[in-house]
Image 1 (tube, rainbow, N blue to C red):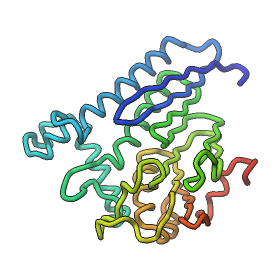
Image 2 (tube, rainbow, N blue to C red):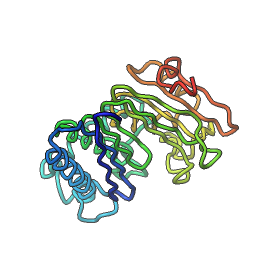
Image 3 (cartoon, one colour):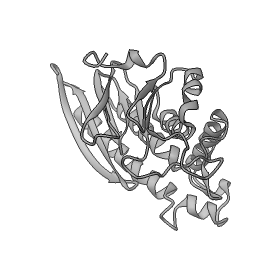
Length: 257
């Protein structure tokens, strides 16, 4: 875009790929933005070190084993667990940070980490940021267009979202990782057979948790999402049919509206 330069970076962390696309106004403080990028990348790795359920020495693993108390952990652990508790309450238990009795906040922590990283870049002077963490996206500034993958036709898009001022887009479903989300009430795969659930709202912390909960809810998620502030949803059913909340159309790019 005129008057802007681009800075791109790809980082592997948390078992996934984080892709940064940063727009910098021509003549702005590039070293400061690059320092912000370095700090954001370091922050992602720090989150992995603290919250990984695969690292026996992570604070989360040690907390789960009773080797640490919550007071012994860094403050981010209490913050994330509080956010998980809030998400569980908001969703009436359809989102949970416990799986088969084990503490596991990964349904929220990646979105939270991405949102924190984008805030860091914005404060460093980046004019616009798109950070894609394993398919879930936090935007700052704009305009941006985000394609939502068709879960039934790999390589194709099912819709395109446009954001002028920043937005978060999170998608849950079995297409990429198999059926990793279960109905927390039955401990079985969701009964309604949704192929993917995309949630759009201002921050990825909420979008990530709400997409997880909504996918687990199935068809009943429509009314739940309608009632949430600043939140819209788009679902692809297993038979290829789709539904969306009443306000989702305002996020559609002109080419799909």
